[in-house]
Image 1 (cartoon, rainbow, N blue to C red):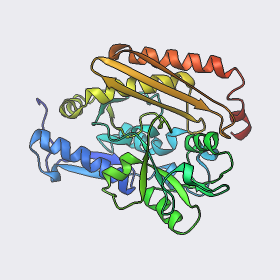
Image 2: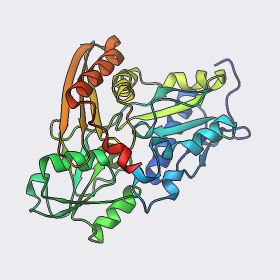
Image 3: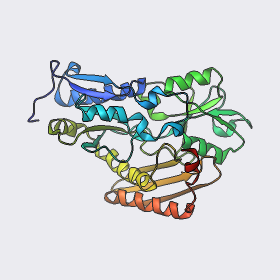
Image 4: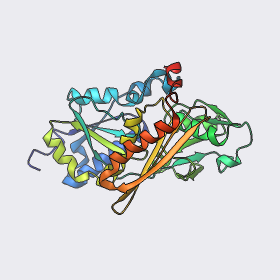
Length: 318
């Protein structure tokens, strides 16, 4: 490290959303940087920034915009120099960054699977006909309705704690949460049942933390290099290339997961209609170095199979 290290008098400012999970991710980033450079926690300052997606919680995500809902204000603060790095849940990130910003550091990925959450039932199969399930995710809604079109799905906005309270209040009798969030918050007491990826493919980049920086900030680039996890980067290169080729957003039910096996990468992807009436999935396998190309190729295949009018429903809701 040739540039000056941060100190309690001149801390590195870490931008994040303010939910308990977002703060846990920012603190994990701080802890890894502190350990890498033998620095005290006081050499870092976590800066909470409220995003549009955090402020508007009474409307479905599809009504108020795409993935930038949870990143736009944080990226503006980064561009203006109000923070030095931004810590994001990668499943919230658009596939393109604003000019002058780069996203090239990833922490080791947590469990990418979804969890089925219910105090009464252990699985989707156990749900009685017509039971109400809550989720704000179009992907989870569509995947659930493919399997169980008889269920009633209701909007379930809010952070992890808010959704658990809604479940306790009887707004729904089951919901879904990311296993990664539950693990990072140490919430083993939550009645959860992991859903295998063959039964419910997760969101693109689910379980991964990304760290964004200014492109010309060489000091920060040097600091982030020791905590970067190349294997997560390889997975996300394939998954996010698949997403980008589909032009995916919060309004598009898309799922995908890349798995590494030695020097090989196996990618599975899925596109769905929101009502669960149609779904298309496929796989690719090849060298890790070709992950992004495989993602684009799989997207082209699914688009061809789905047909030119598959995403026409988006125009009717935006």
